[in-house]
Image 1 (cartoon, helix red, strand yellow):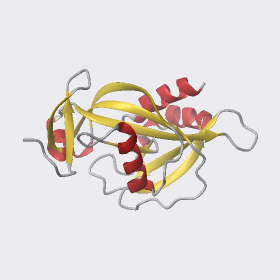
Image 2 (cartoon, one colour):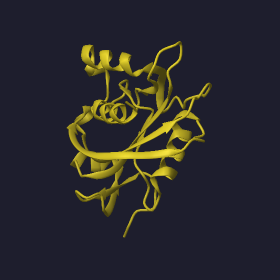
Image 3 (cartoon, helix red, strand yellow):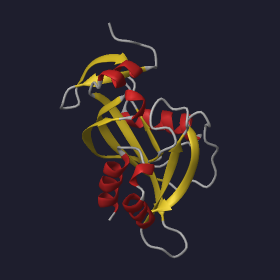
Image 4 (cartoon, helix red, strand yellow):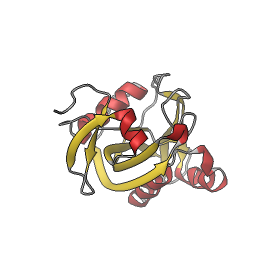
Length: 183
């Protein structure tokens, strides 16, 4: 029987087809392939620069993995029978108290497998979602987010070269794919 509580992930095959649900923490202990999404909110650069600024978040220290690391705007897992757009709107609201009003674009997906802190394993079929929306003010949920900042793509490239350990393991792959799309 499929789980109906919200602390589960949707396990999938290599084609992204749902096959079962599993307790979220247990799936990360076992390293099961599961559905995920990475949201990146961008806006046109300010102060006369060309290109885009990216809304980044520093994950709260108490997160079950990757606490204190910088990542894209929001990352999470869709619920069973939830569309990616619904999942995006839900988690951006829950984590950052931002209402997504712009179009949510699904750019691509990728599969990755990585060892994390706390002896957990991330193995995700990760959809990359792009939202081009200029957010002026918002109040992040401190249980989810430690800090946020708008950062120009050129500055992110330099930061990734000099201090890649400050980013979550999936971020560079998300950054590369979104940046290629925006260029």
